[in-house]
Length: 426
Image (tube, rainbow, N blue to C red; front, side):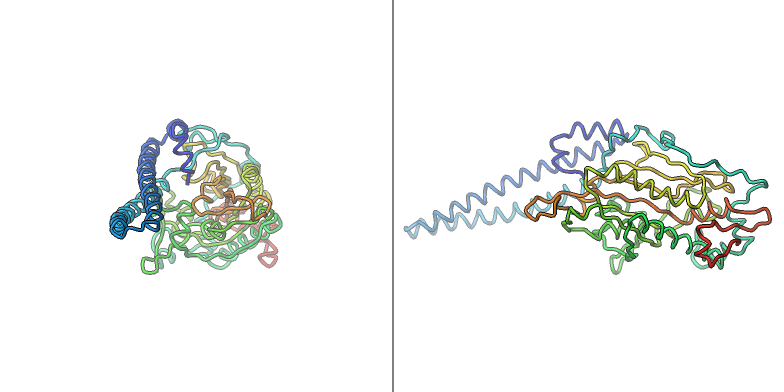
């Protein structure tokens, strides 16, 4: 959520950023609605404060008035004022709710370092690490590898839950579990603290991380209990410190968490219909940071490096892509994707998105800190960041397709062998 003072005092600059960098005319129109609603709110606030000042002054006058008739008249007059105040307070609450509801739908503003562009075609490949592997035989896609080895069962996944679901069996399940455990250990060595969060959260948590109110259609919800199934561990982990004031001397705070993730994917007909690239349920290891504003960009770059280390250690070719303004997520002010090469699919697959949100999430969730831990200092908003480290199943796809052998078997990357009891071949 953006600062209302920014929207009020620098509306032209915000509108220009929406129009010229995000190419979002809807946001420009919404900004004007926010400003109009905020103007009405401030008018109501001024009127209410004027009446309350009048009431307070009259209370002192009534206390000093000796004439019973005059005193009674003043009291009757103030009863009418009290009713007017109550009516204004009710209107003010409705106006404040309207401003908040509208402001929550405004996207974050892009950082100055983000290249301007209209779509993913304008994203910038920052660097490529390793060359796409050329196998000495026609590479098989992961769905063929998985079915031949009996480690991915599409038929029974569809029978249990429908399309876009699958079952990992035997060595396939073990390989996924090994990847998750190993990735967490990598991030622990990098200084992250592990948490295991709930997979269901309250609505306020999704408002705090900006999935709601704008993206409610993509979420799974238990209507009876009003719980939402998490689309990513970012949601519960970021909300660990919702409505808290942190000791600034403890920043940065770095967490890593594994979770299953649930998203109501709006998948186009015919797109990614084979394999396990897209689904309504998937696993992910997530990194989340809470940092000082002045360090957040450096922390973003180090977050990217932390995710990259996983790919380097796995020996997988990958590239780092900086998102242009038109391809930023709703809540990020700067974002980098890591894409790994999958030789069987013959394409780059996104396995990590590393984002800096600035104070956009922190303002919504009221996550603040005192710079030196001094309780006399005014609290400030932290900056929040997160990044996948990494997302399954696409990392699993890349491992199966990169390490496949001519006979249909798959070599296990050396770093994963201790997590598979020393097994070298699937």
